[in-house]
Length: 491
Ligand code: HEM
Image 1 (cartoon, rainbow, N blue to C red):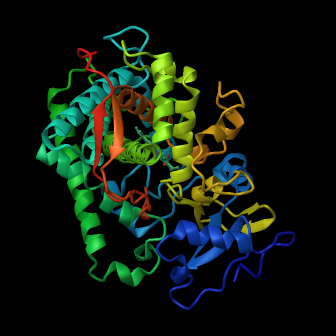
Image 2 (image 1 turned 45 degrees about the horizontal axis):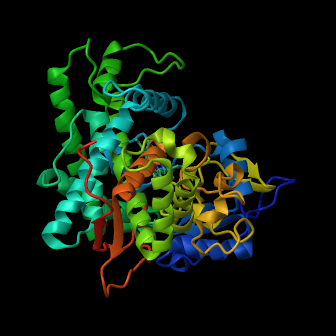
Image 3 (image 1 turned 60 degrees about the vertical axis):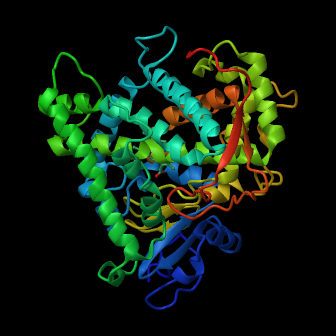
C-alpha cells in the first residue's frame, strides 16, 4: 500500500504488477540479472518487484547506484534478514548476517586491520615486496609446475580444479599460516563446494521469499546446510589448534591476531561496543570464505577469454616479454608498466560480470532516491551486470575489447573508464578484499602467461555461457598448454 500512499513530494517506485503469493518470481527466470536489466529499460533505474510476498528494490544505472551506495551510503548499508543468510557461519557472518550498526562496523574494522597486517606488511623474505605477494608468487609458481606435470602426463587439464587450490592456499596462509597439497582430499572437497554454495546464496532464491519453501524438502537447501556445516567445522578445527598453540609474543596469522584481540577484552578504540569472543574469532570464517571462490572464478574466466582470443593472449605475452623479460618473475610493482594486461583484466571483470549483483543490501531507514520514496528495511538488489553492459556507458558492450580502457597510444589505462566497471560493489559494504583480489588476479595471471601459452583442445567447442549464482561460472572446461621457453630454475 505504501506504493500508492507515499509522502508528499515523493513518487512511488514503479514496477510490474505482482501475481498473488509468488509476486514477480516467474518473470525472473533462470537469469535474473538479464531479466532485471530488461525490466530496467521499461521502468528505469529505480524499480520495485515483488518476490513472493516481499517487496524488493532493484537499482540500475551507474549514477543511481553511486547516489545510493556512496552519497546515501548509510541508508543503504544493511543486509536483509534472509533465510539462507541465517544458515551461513552459524548466523554470525560479518558478510551475510542481518546485524548492522555498531557491531557490524566494529567487526568490519577488525577484519580490515587483520587483513592489512597479514597482506601488505613488508615481506621478511625479499625486499620491496609484501607478505601477500610472497604467498601469491610461491603458489603461482607451484601452479605452473603442476600444469606442466599434467601436460606431460595427460596432455590436458581442468584449470579450475588446480587454480582453486592455489588461490585457497594464499588466503589459508594469511588466515591460518598453512597450505595444502593439490592432492589433499579433505581440502579439495571443501574448496570445491562453492558452486553449490553460490547456487543457494544467489540473489532471488525463492526460499528466501516464499516462507513455505523453507519447510519443504529441497536438495539445494539440504546441500547448503551441509556445506555451511562442513565449512565451519573445517575452520573451527584450525581455530582450536591455534588456541592450543598460541604464544602472545609471536602472532603467526590472522586467526592468532583475532584471538588475541578477543582476549584483550578492550573496547574497540573507535566504538563503544564490546564484541563477544565468538564474533571476533569468527571473522576468520568470512575472510577465508570470501577469499578464494571470487578470485578462482576471475582466473578461470581469464583463461577462457585467453584461449577464445589467442591474439589477445599473444599481445599480453609480448608486453610481458618487453617489460619483464624472461629472467625474473612478475611483481606487483610491474602493474603500472603493463597497461594492456591491466586493460585485459578490467575487460574480463566487465564482460563476464561474474558477480552480477552485489550481495543484497537493505535500507536502514525511510529515504528518498531520485525522488522515489523508499521504505525502511526493504531488500535492495544492485545490478552490477546492467552497469557493465549499459550501452549508454560502453560502446558495443558485448564485444570483448581490452583496448576500450587504454588511451589512444596504448600507453596507459584511462582511470575514469576503469572506475565505471562495477564488480566489487561500492561504499560502506564495498568488498574488503578488493586490493588483495586485484593483486592476486594480476600476479597469478602474469606468472602463468610469462611461462605458458594456453589453448583450447582440438575439436572442442568452448562453452562460455555463465551459470547464474552468487558468482557466475562457466562450465568446467579442459584446456591444454605449452611452455613458452625452458623452465627457469625455481625463482
Ligand atoms: C564483499 C567482490 C575478493 C572479502 C564483496 C562484495 C562483492 C565482492 C561484489 C559485496 C559488496 C556489496 O554487498 O555491496 C569481490 C571480487 C573479488 C573479491 C570480485 C575478487 C576478484 C575478496 C577477497 C576477500 C574478500 C580476496 C578477503 C580476503 C570480502 C568481504 C565482504 C566482501 C569480507 C563483505 C563486506 C561486508 O559485508 O561488509 N566482495 N570480492 N573479497 N568481500 Fe569480496
